[in-house]
Image 1 (cartoon, one colour):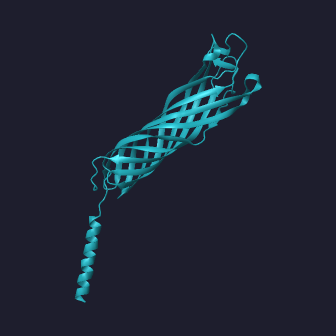
Image 2: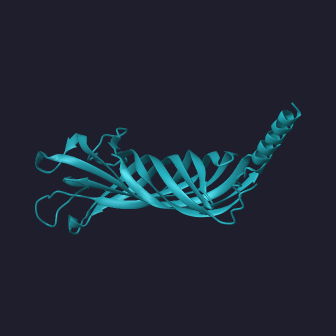
Image 3: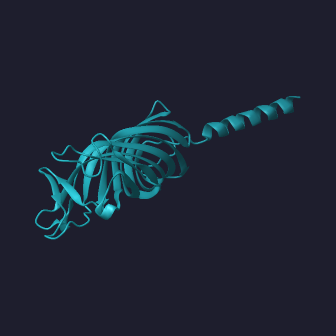
Length: 261
């Protein structure tokens, strides 16, 4: 009986020692890495008040451009601090090249020769600076994040005959009969972002994460112009409202990894 008790006690102490020796992973430190993912969203384009007439949409009647799913990819860097064993706070910045495009046919007006007016929007890149709060257990960490966001957008209207200007309608013409106008413009706009994710410490110094982000850029004015207007180029001042969603898979290298909190 005594040998059995001694063996049982020794085994329990050994397992307890092994459990105690199991490393706990620290998330404290700085990191740099890259990410790939997909983005989608919606842009609402509407006309501003003009003294003579509207060209592609009645007042208070925005045209929605729903984008398909587009590719994005880029880099991120940041720092985290783990405290009270399981909680984490941190700050990060990221930049993503993007190819997120939306298209729509004008449901209100027709363009040159009675053809449809086409509206196109494209997001070239997205960038954020955010703070995050996380809860970690050993190799895993769940987090939420929020902060400032920026994007660069391009918009083009195709097959217009007229373009809006501060003084009213301007015929898109190079001295001859009216021609099809294709005014375009681009702008960097700012907004905010919220997101959440799950990160895994997959190996010494390396972690991988999956993340969902929502971006809201509010409503901004964007000026469009077409150089084919001759002495009086067609110019359109539009309102652009944009929201974007993205899913990212990231891989980061963590500096000063210790393996313990």
